[in-house]
Length: 401
Image (tube, rainbow, N blue to C red; front, side, top):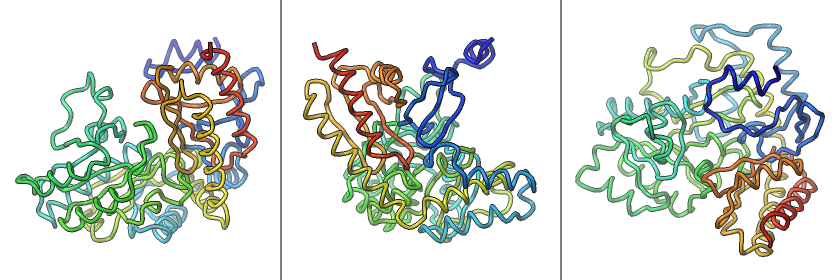
């Protein structure tokens, strides 16, 4: 049996897979079992920010795997310590906790917020989250997620989560300053809602959010699992808003395609954790953090993020032109750095994504009618041009009648 047949027979049916088996990657390109090449505008859902077969990441992994694959976190390892230093020195944070995924990083942030409230702020355990948000599939992260479709079949959700409209500061202020305001210990927000449709927070909203939470000793958590580490053209997404959170969650691209998560926090918040409060068997393992060190060094090189911004501006201009050319199909385009969205009026985004596969491009879809673009950060303008040309073909061939 081939990979598709084996998958259908033995793997639980939790993914709506495309009818495509991928076997190799190089740069911004992936290849199927027949040797056909695809330009990647998905990046494993914003994971492969340096593309595929990256020499620095490969070398770091192969070198470390010969030395030490795993020891428990009862011992010190150099790759983990070096990565922690890099993340803290280059961000607002003073301390890091390593885990294995974005959902786990959100779980860690929730736990840290609640134990901080118990020990220091003396607030309740409630957490304010946003409608249309996505924070992960584990129960804490799922309860924070503001989309009912992900909750269906798994109710009841965990107690203590309240969801309000994204970018609505008045709704937030009413909760925190209202009669039950002391019940809330934290606010969790994505600076850019990736799974929600690439919805970008307003700068003034974020600034007001930061001021309100600081004044009331409410922990502010930024979920940057999808949009951190260069995706927006800044090293971290919060840097676009001229504020600093108290806690930030990272994951997807941090180890160049290997599983990792991280909870970053200011010392004033991180001090709430003591030995035994939280742990992860595999979190921050030597091989994974060796890969992450190599990845971080690459995106932090002089001029790298400037190029991301330039390419991001170019994609934005091409998407704006596409909307002007096809106003009957395209409701809105949104982008920041190298994460973008094309929202359709009636067209199903999955249909367009399948057509693009036939054209040799890989994309992802969210919210039924939104095509999401998250290419590797090393994507070239010529690749963008070819994608736009293919989109025009798809529109004219299938919908422009």
